[in-house]
Amino acid sequence: MSARFTVLTGGVGGAKLVDGLYRILPQNSLTAIVNTGDDFRHFGQPISPDIDTLLYTLSGKSNQALGWGREGETWNFMAALKSLGGEDWFNLGDGDLALHVLRGMALSAGEPLSGIIARFAEAWDLQLSILPMTDDAVATWVETDEGLLPFQRYFVERQCAPKVQAVRFEGAAEAVPAPGVVAAIMDCDTVLVAPSNPWLSVDPLLAIPQIRKALESTKAPVIAVSPLVEGKAVKGPTAKLMDELGLEVTNHSIAAHYGNLLDGLVVHNKDEAPQSVAIARTDTLMKSPKDRERVARTVLALAAECRR
Amino acid sequence: MSARFTVLTGGVGGAKLVDGLYRILPQNSLTAIVNTGDDFRHFGQPISPDIDTLLYTLSGKSNQALGWGREGETWNFMAALKSLGGEDWFNLGDGDLALHVLRGMALSAGEPLSGIIARFAEAWDLQLSILPMTDDAVATWVETDEGLLPFQRYFVERQCAPKVQAVRFEGAAEAVPAPGVVAAIMDCDTVLVAPSNPWLSVDPLLAIPQIRKALESTKAPVIAVSPLVEGKAVKGPTAKLMDELGLEVTNHSIAAHYGNLLDGLVVHNKDEAPQSVAIARTDTLMKSPKDRERVARTVLALAAECRR
Image (cartoon, rainbow over all chains, first blue to last red):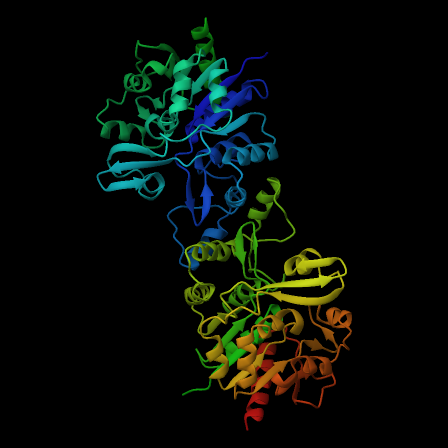
């Protein structure tokens, strides 16, 4: 049986690593387990930002310039919505709406999110498993100096400006992993953790008891890619948030956060690294497809070392 | 108190007459009561085709070339939807979706359709009352030689090809007129019936008992514009449907259909006219805004005659 790989992932940075892995691994050997803590309803439509970013990235539809959404997107829906007095703090592109509207219909008909995403991935001919972490409702809330904010209000509307005091994952303790999630962690050869924000994008997965337990008990090595590049976050609030949580913005803090779940960490060439786990180095900034493949190769090589 | 005008209307042809009236009457003297029998849910979104056509027409947003929808519309939503395996027999434009999505949100929150449409009309600065015939669910069904079809399946998907045996308005007998509808008929100076399809677009209104009763008892004259132009329907299935229902395609049949509700009928210059009601003639084909205004003036003049 050929080797199987499972990657835990969140938003844009995570999707880039998954894309790199998808490009170099044999077809149908990869499973991506995706954060759904950022999911919310907007204008009545169910949005799954991290899953959708991954679908767009892997199918070559992602908007390189914007860094989110679809390439060649148009915005007539939002323009008409504004003319009717609709809220405009969260932009939904015209093409992007198709995912949300079809997802909403299927959810209303009782189909679980995991089944819907599998159909979307099949429609776009993607040769991997994309699994939401759970079919249950889990919602990331951010406790800030401006009060408790739903994730998207913090992240999109307030552009991560409020100071974070803590992060909560409502519903995670009771959530059951989506079908295939636990098996993908237990029965694979390598577990990878994408360079997504550990506190906002990976922690929702770890907050689901059966996922954490599977990571603790799997025989596969668990290898993460640090989200820090030259001591900073590439995009998003990782460094700012670490600072606000009283943590040093270093790979020591990243490794300490994952604790004994972690066997190896891929860090940026120029960054210092902890000695508590196996380390590999490369330029972890992923600008081009070649960059993504290089980082994917580095993380797979470190995993192979850890398996020895 | 200035004169008040109430027009009963359905789809595209009706919207043109309402536009003509709106252009020549004083602001806020006109109330349009609109067919909602064509309303349906598509992709989970509530669509009100006749109301939306009227909103687009009066606000100068209607697509002249297509004959429906918005000017300058884009179709990225439908393209993405098709790529995901969604049904494509009913096109929803990107900008058009805003009306449906906002309507869906508001309906889910418990707001009645009449309140939602009033907000939309206000957002687009329309100086008339647009009232759905009812806030209750009424659904037009067409009995055909291919079986019983929901209106949009007959009209859009099957392009009116099946032979019609009868038309039903599910829920009409129990429906209550929307707030203001009965008053608009009872307390106005003139009731107009737009050149919409009498059997498909006007009958749903007449099938609501309190609307029919108000039309029977109002002191205002009731004046219709015939949908026939040189013995044919301008657009849509009126003539074909009359034929299938065993009716002569003449203004006699139109007048007979409205029966004693009707005081006057505006017919096309070249068409014969019944003697049972007061008649005015003009070129009823409304291509330009000037045409719409001319037909509106003709119908208002006939109404003034009937009031004498």
